[in-house]
Image (cartoon, rainbow, N blue to C red; front, top):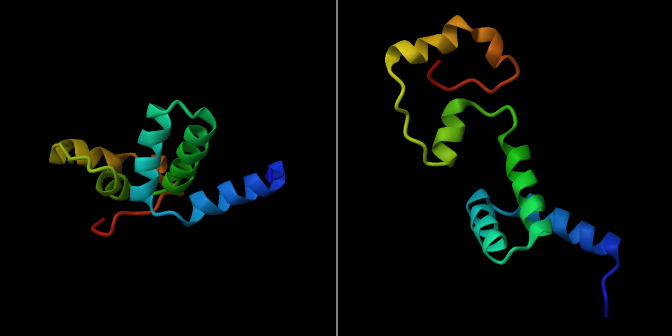
Length: 93
């Protein structure tokens, strides 16, 4: 039995929205290695959607990025607060 395009799209959407971020990262690696462009695009878009308007601290934690900014560089965030409008604030701000 072949699934209809609508049913497949619904399954794909449900899969990516209900899957933990750590699993999505693994799916990205697998889809890239296996050259499955549609799956790669779908999962990357879901990750991007989840990142939207998240704080710098959240992105660093989620992607295991070390904060290598100096205190002076961190101060730039406060000097240019307009650039961070609509973004979740870090807990320690």
